[in-house]
Image 1 (spheres, rainbow, N blue to C red):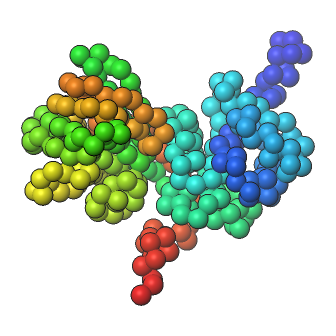
Image 2: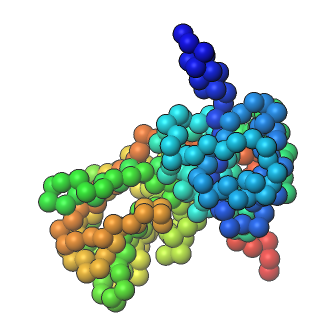
Length: 300
């Protein structure tokens, strides 16, 4: 083995931290300067999108930054700096590779990215002390079929949304669950959500809040044209099939991150994914306390 091979082996033996960040946040460089030295002291390497470089330099960090887009190695950990949207981006990029995610919320809401920025340093200290709790979240696998051909597929942590475009025309969808037809939905759209996503778009449609650890799936019509349609909670293993009868300017959106235009006769298949997203948080973090704070349940 040559000198170059030894050097490469030494680099690869160092753990890799992938960073996904909301680069426009005013708090970003401050949080980086607090937490990255803790990883540096342990000999970690760092990778991120090139958009992070400005905040990285502003924070005064001496370590170099590798590019995520050219990184084939699976990171040991993903550090997510931002809100729920940033965390969904991290989940899409690293969730199928089973990389645990520790998130620090740089915004205000944050149902998923719930670790607060003022506690960023202690959060990472507790990570190295192995004091953080692993929270395993269910995901959904989605396939878009057109004339029997696979057009797109993906994994979502929050929700799958079928919605209308700019024209105010309803969408007609044939729904079936586990191979059994349940009817034709005429509505502005449909949200198929995980328990994690029950506080997102599904919540806005009137769907229930579901504890994230439950093995379940939610169907929530968006403005149905019949009052008999109501949100439904299904068991997690359920296969859901949505057939588009009419779909003028309709779109399929995965976690609010990527979208695909839909055509009449397209078919969307949704089922439980084998992948889970692992979120790390403090042991004293309580889901109902989070709901109380974020939804102002404590106010009169």
